Image 1 (cartoon, rainbow over the protein chains, first blue to last red):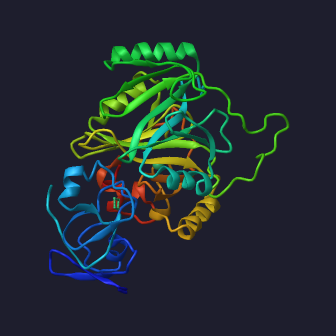
Image 2: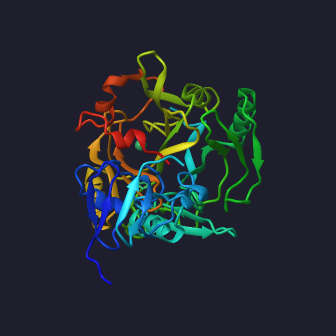
Image 3: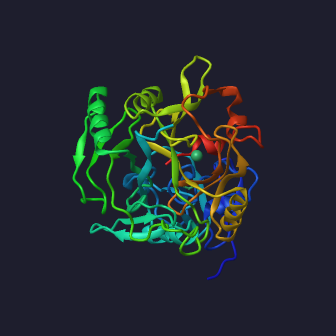
Length: 96
Length: 308
Ligand code: FES
Ligand SMILES: [Fe+2]
């Protein structure tokens, strides 16, 4: 199945689209009400940390363990610059 | 001034998340040369214009950031004095044997300072195999690659109790503080410290979490090269943070961006010539935006808040 974009839903009800293969953070950068700031785009600084509540994704880059521990990763905490969607995603802010 | 105490920050070991991709950046884009690999897989690099064995070591790790910084001091005598003074200052010093984990390096002395950063002091290191010329020398042997950085220049560290860190640098390492920024309550917010004529060899910003690094700075020749770096950032789809702009603090012309593992890099040209007898420049926090980003005139939040 090919898909020319996925829908990414935000906790405030907003949504934006992300192209296959593109990082969620790169897509979010085009969205005017982005809820997080942009940092290194390298998985190192941790400012783009959110939780994926539903949907599947592929990890593009390694995420710094200083910001996403193994346990947190199991709970769906990811760095938005390090993942690309494989389906529509729902995102949330939640501690881990 | 006689440069007879701390010469310069000569070595930095950084953690990277993706060694191959990040190394490619340091070599092909930043323009450093790979000097050697250690048996545990770390990679040593130097710029085209540095004489010493290497100045940057990259270590594959599961988080980005700083392992340690090492300062070269003028002689073994100075080194022994500083080690003694470091212990008297209250830091526990351990010895790292010559030619152990950093190829080409003599004995180093390692300790942790109050900000949570690991510092090292050393006085001896082998010359690199490929040094700049010294007999009727040309300006370079091979044309500099990519951004063509000239040397490891300085770094900005974030951690708690920078007033003590500043006191360590001045009292033990005999550095001085050309420029600083105080909070309204008179406490130190940031400090720029040097052991040479550079406006800074290192700087600190007060921060609650220990051991963080804000950026590593490399020297460029001039403003034209800052522009060329901006082109290379765009062409290579690197993530830029700030610039090209000018600091009023240090007067450097600058651009900040992130390497592929998320460590922030600054490339920097110009800056005033510092002298220890010149009056200190002092900034109030409410003028800090203009001090840091002279053209923008305001603080850029990503700059102050994002560290690794
Ligand atoms: S932007 Fe730095 S970790 Fe994603
Ligand atoms: Fe800097």
